[in-house]
Length: 172
Image 1 (tube, rainbow, N blue to C red):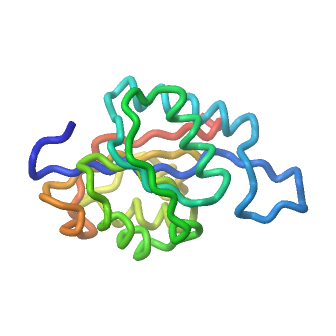
Image 2: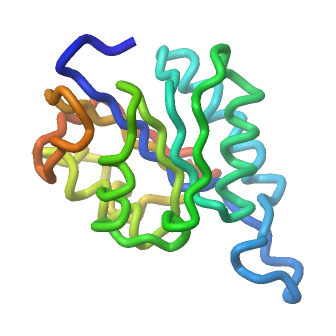
């Protein structure tokens, strides 16, 4: 739970996807084994820190939906409201912000894609994490950023405070 006048965003890039079937449309690519392991580890990490979303805004792509499903199965005790948003598929930072501003719960998880999600993550906080890999925003990278606002429609770039940043891309 977040206090009144406080909003928390858990911003996650989908885990590593499979490229082994050239007949699949990009939108339909599932996670590979490494991606499933990363999503499971991310779910455990989120739970260990008490980062439980009350609302999930997720791209409709297979890999983002599967990332969410693995995270939820691994660690989420209370089922949040989940919205699958077509507009988050390959969205740029402006579109991501517009979708975020429609959120209704204090703690929101958003799952999306690069390059938009890395640009969005870099615009949100007043100061970005010191991690040298932050701007790459690898698969399964997750930024937890807090805002001192009463509603999501008040969020502006550069307002956030970074609470955490983690990577589970299998390269650590």
